[in-house]
Image 1 (spheres, rainbow, N blue to C red):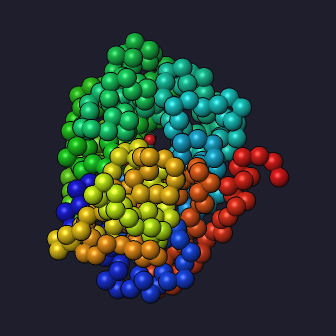
Image 2: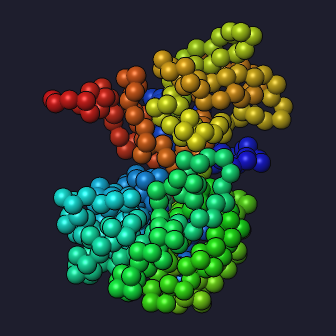
Image 3: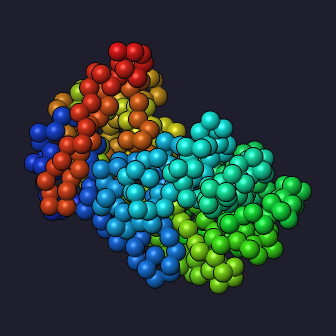
Length: 401
Ligand SMILES: *Cc1c(COP(=O)(O)O)cnc(C)c1O
C-alpha cells in the first residue's frame, strides 16, 4: 500500500497521547486497537447486511482469540489453514462457521478436523477423491479451489497463487481432464483466492476470468468463496464495486458468496511499541538500533518486503534521515530508512503502525529475542495485558522441561 497520508494508521493518537498511555509498558510490545477493530467490523457488517454475502476472518493473519467475542459481532465465522486454526475458530467463535482450506490434509488429522469444520476446500482432485465422500457423510460442505490463471499482482510472486509454478488451485486444463461428472456433482462450492492487498477492480477482473473459464461447471453449486486479499477497510477501497461483484455471482449462479479476508479485517488495528537502544553514525549514515527486530517481530517486513509506517516519521517537515534496525546478528535485520524531525535517541519510544496483521501469528525467538507482550487498547482508552512472555517461552519451544 502506498501510504498517501502517513498519519492515517495513527488517527487514534488524535484522542490520546501515546507517550502518556503507553508509558508503563515494557517494550517491545504489540497493542491491538479495539476501537479500530470495531470501525473495521462496522464496514464489514455493512457489506454483509446490504448483500447477504458472508465475511470470514482468515485466522492465519490474526488469531488473537481474546478479541473474537467482539469480532464475532461483525463476522460470519473463521477461515482456517488446517487443524489447529480450525479448532481455534470452533472454540473461540463457537456459534459461527468454520471453513478450512489446505494444500493437502493429513490422514491422521482428518477425523478430528471433521469435528470443527463446516466447509472443507480441497486443493487437488486427488484430495477430493480421498476425503470428499467422508466429508459429505459427515454432513460437511465441500469445495475445490480453482486457479483462474489470471494474475493481477506485480512484484511479490510468493503471494501470487496465479504466478507460474503455483501449486494452489486446479487449472481449467486439469479441471477438464480430471473432474468427472460424479466429482463435479459432489461439490457444494468453488473457492478461488488470487489477491493480496488489492482493490475491488482486481477482484472484478478476476471474477470475469473465473466466469469465462469455469462458469459452465457452476450449475449445481451452492456457494462461491472469493478468498482473501481484499483490502476492504483501506481508505481508498471501492466498496460499491465489491458489492457489484457479489451481486453478479449471486444473480448469475444463484449462490451464496463468501469472502475470507485477513488483512482487511484488522487493517491498521495494531501498533508495535519499541525503544531506542542506541544511535550512531557510520559510513555517513545515521543508524538507530531498536529493541524490536524485523526478523523476529514483523517478519513480513523482510518477506514481503515492505516498510511499515512509523508514528511522526516521514512527515513533510522531517529532514533527518536514519536507518532503523534490530539488535540481532542478522545483517538484513533492517526495518527501513525514515525521516525524522529530530534524531531518535536512547530510550525514545517509537511506534510502528498497522501491526495487527501477520505479526503476532508469525513472530519467533531467533537470536533469543523475547516475544513482545500483547495488549488491548480498549475503546475507552484503558489497557489490558493479554500475555506475560519471558525466558520460558524462548527455552521450552526448544526442548523438554
Ligand atoms: C492468506 C489467505 C487468506 C487471507 O488473505 P489476506 O491477504 O490476509 O486477506 C484467505 N484465504 C486463503 C485461502 C489464504 O491463503
